[in-house]
Amino acid sequence: TETRRGFLDSEPLREADEDLASEVNLNNTVMTEEEREEIQQELTKLEEEINTLKQVLLSKEKQHAELRQKLGITPLDELRNNFSKGWHDMQSSTAYKKTSETLSTAGQKTTAAISTLGNAITRKIGDMRNSQSFKSFEEKVENTVSTIKTKVGGTGTGGSFEEVLSSAANATSQDTPTNNLMDSPEQPC
Image 1: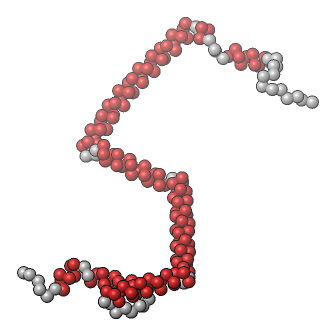
Image 2: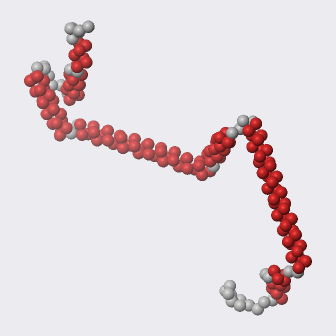
Image 3: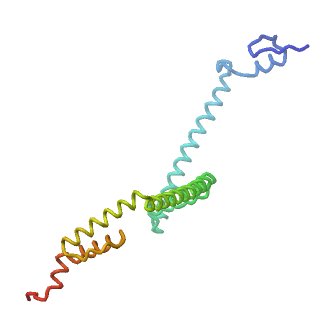
């Protein structure tokens, strides 16, 4: 039977493990002076190449800016183009499309819920208008308006609640100062 050993359980090193360990150079002091000098020369050469490439890149960037200036491409144009491209890329992304679809669905469900709520409120108001308490209130208002009209000099006809409100609104609009000035036969010049 084979027993399982943990990561930290010790096991004797085999010959292959010893060969692998000897190939790994963990200490730079084992390096010969000749190897060290060769690596140092290679490092110096790489640093010089990097500096040369930096100078070439700066020169190319300067040439790039000059050509763009000659073509009339300003940094603002470039910013606009980058923004437009970024916006287009974002709208093309899967995340944006999924979010847009989710928001669209949520909007449709919200619209449906508001419509249902509006219908429920309309139905409740209709029920309320047909209730005995509202009819009693409507009669009291009609009687009060009739009484006021009779005392003020009106005809005193009752009518429905809508007719009473409509006649009150018409009476109010006819009593405005601008209407009185227009209707007056004596207008000073």
